[in-house]
Image (cartoon, rainbow, N blue to C red; front, side, top):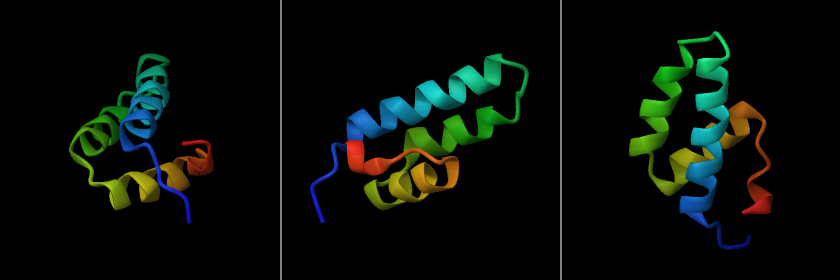
Length: 57
């Protein structure tokens, strides 16, 4: 397993959720709050749930 750049992954997830939120889905704000405070393992779980490939980070 490789080392994950948590801050880069966090930024990507924030961008994804922010775009969705402003695209008409305000419930994505809950994901933004979770991402802000997530640990490394939680970020990986969120990335998997949202379909973001964590292997890029």
